[in-house]
Image (tube, rainbow, N blue to C red; front, side, top):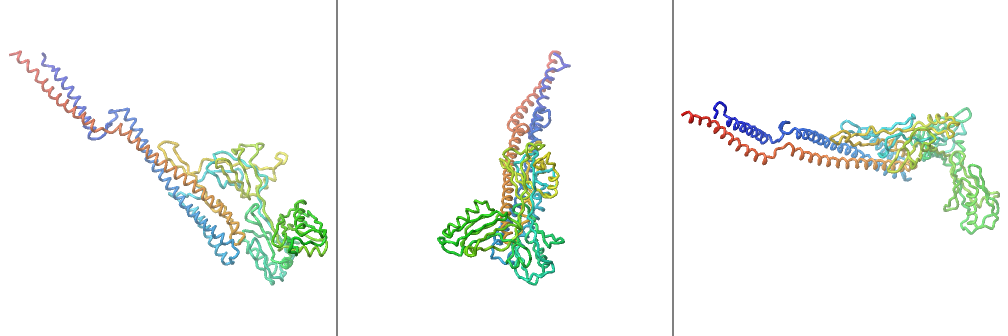
Length: 586
């Protein structure tokens, strides 16, 4: 036996220290509640838990981001709800204004309310904000750029992918322009009382008015009918030119005199647009006197119907209709209560219907009447098509893309909700560019207009814990111009009628935008639910790695306590063993 080195005590003490360290670690886990208090506890588990904790915090913030996105969409949708309510009210007022029973003062009140509602729509579009970011002014809409100045993409559906889109334009839209040529000098007195109606708006002409007074009244009424008046006089002609704000076939200038006497007094030289044949008979079985009936259209095409005196009135009516069709006269023939009405299909100063008979008896029997003298002009739509393969440059339009023109707008539609509207705002300047095209290199003289669509400009919501986990929210511009009601005028019955079509289009567009925003909101709410679920599952997973299982740890702690006590007792016993050496020495 050795007394300088107590091996038994050393061994017992070593176990005691190890058990004491384990008890300390167990106490730390029990007091902190964590299995991982330092990386040495579980280096691999610490690395995994750190990554998970990063994901959990990211998911938590992404959840908040998505909730903010829902609030943003609700803000925009709430504003659009009010815009749609105002559009519905405007449409109701337009229906009321289109009724002929309204007086001037009533229609003026209707127009004032509509104009106030339009101003409010524009104000909402410019001031609706979320966190100091405007939502409806187009700043949250996809970016698109054209390579021709004065051309703008005014509408773009969400289904249009990024890329280049090209159309070719051979002619641009024109406004309607009518020239009132007065056959008298400005100082001459009219001498006849009557009405001059321009686009449905009545201008009262007094007998004491001079031609200059009449021109002043016309120019004062222009804003009420969306026209611009300019002096078109020269050394030999006293004239006013009337031009519409609008472009295309919907742009019309119509001027009507209330009587032939006023027409002659003003020296306008309007021509009859319609002719009526009353026949001065009541029974279709009656016959007409013999002779020839001649009908002439605006292009001087004629049709002659021979009347032998034996045909019934019904036969003559049928013969007139057949003659107009067979001779391809640009005239519409329709029945009315008293007979037949013939209406020219042409427009402008030369648009007229002429009908005559070669003898007085037949002339009287026909009962020829011509409607009020009229001047009418109509604009032309833009002429465009999808850019052909013979034109250089790439275009994303497919073979199923369909382009239609209305006024100065080109609308392209394709499958799967593809829709793009291109508006030419400075057509005259661009028309000059077309005129400069060399026909030898470009026989059709088509100008290529290319639009680049980018995935930029939309409101980007980061709804994930990692890079690229985003949702782009596209909120289109909601202005009077983008809704197509910027030029709407409800001062007249005709203007109210046109306003109904424009307001229907605006309501459809707002409804479409609201539907899109509703889809975004549903998507964001689903995203929030998914983020919450992911965060919950990750939290459960990290808990299994980091958190102490108190029951298991308490069992381990109890075991280690017993082992520590036993080790302590054994160290005491080992320390007493060298005393047995004294027995050898005694």
